[in-house]
Image (cartoon, rainbow over all chains, first blue to last red; front, side, top):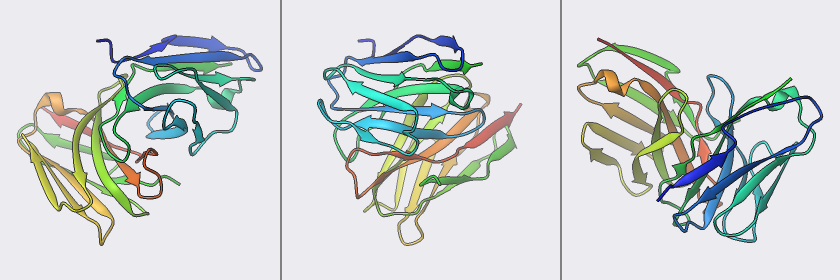
Length: 113
Length: 112
């Protein structure tokens, strides 16, 4: 039982490049989330998916797209990376709706130069 | 702005002392949770308190919730070096069953 896994762990991009961050969970959770955490700051919600087939914007969705590929997988895409997107990205999952603890992945450290 | 705001932003205490962190939020909630983050790691769930509860205990943790003031506190008693971490509150707004909003966190340092 791996919990929540994220790939890659580290990535360096040049401005304008694109990439997809992958997230998978094996806990059969319906809800999945993408957050970003800037140095010394809290987590800001980028997008979330309440269930397979649905996605919704969070606090800071601009510059990102997401795909809920199936119940297990939720990917985050940066179409044209900008230095302002340098951050640590965390994926999380949880059940049931309205409560339940979130389980977090180990994070992806992204630097955009 | 974020739904939850913790204070203080940073707290340094002696090992064995108690640590208290506070969280304020803006909208009506279903429940509130506290998480811990060790440096460079993901967040780990500590405790959940529902909107109809006023106080909850788990080991050395005590959480209070005052929905009239839209605030919560986390007390860690008899602190240990291993408690050094950042602590975040997370709220579940009534308007959305799945959306979760995190506060900005309190960085707790325990001096030996």
